[in-house]
Amino acid sequence: MQASMTTRRSSFGIMRTFLIAALLAAISALPGFAISKDFSQSYPLQAGGTFELQNVNGTVEVQAWDRNEVEVRAVKTAKERESDLDRVSIEVEAKPNAVSVITRYPQDEGVEVTVEYAVHVPHSAIVEHLGTVNGTLRISGVDHVEELRTVNGNIEVYDGGGAVHAHVTNGNVHLELAHVREKDETFAETTNGSVLLVVPADTQANLEARCLNGSFASELPVSLESTLRPREMHGKLGHGGAPIRLRTVNGGIQIAVLRSTV
Image 1 (spheres, one colour):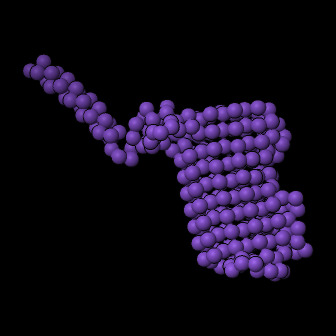
Image 2 (spheres, rainbow, N blue to C red; image 1 turned 60 degrees about the horizontal axis):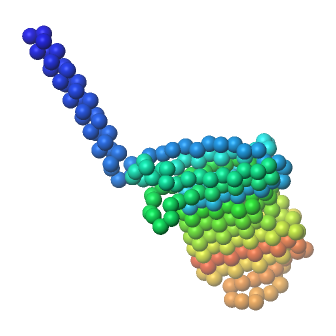
Image 3 (cartoon, rainbow, N blue to C red; image 1 turned 90 degrees about the vertical axis):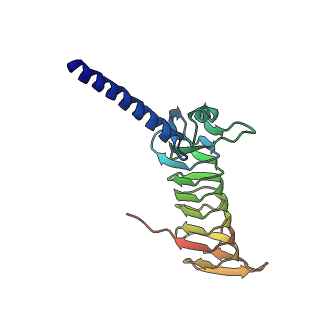
């Protein structure tokens, strides 16, 4: 009798192990099941050094900090096969004055993998190029930002500055600039989305704004100079100075005053 009970318990344990394994296998085979792999590295970057990152599918967030180094954290997520994770690589070229990150996908092959980035750079770094195809670009606290591009997603800059050029196809552009220097041009364009530019109240700039299917509004006084084309205006903020060009096709344009959060 005792032997029979022991045999039953053993059989039950084997069956339970088998069922758990089968359940896990079934779950992993379900559509939408995600398998992830982390990437984390740091690289020294001297004051005034450049940083660039090119992605394909996934959001990119860049935040400034007080260290003279770049910290790159990323999460690769495969929709179906774990083996796909190794087919998408993160390539980094690091020099004392420049750090470049590129997401490589296999050519001529469809791989359902997203790569989400969270990056820290020095405040004094120059974010030279930042791009993705499907995802949002978000930059905070960087003194010098230049080229930003995404196709499907938003571009957001907070507490930034520099010669910001933001290009979006389907998404909004949100630029909060702590300073607008005369030598720096601010350019923001989107096809399907709105443009919001937030600048200090004493900003001196030459303004060009074009919105084909939308409205224009400004909290700052604009001295209108000319309208060369339909739905396009040229004017000045203050006495004029730094060039600012804002464009959208399907959406509005708004200029707001930067307010202290202290």
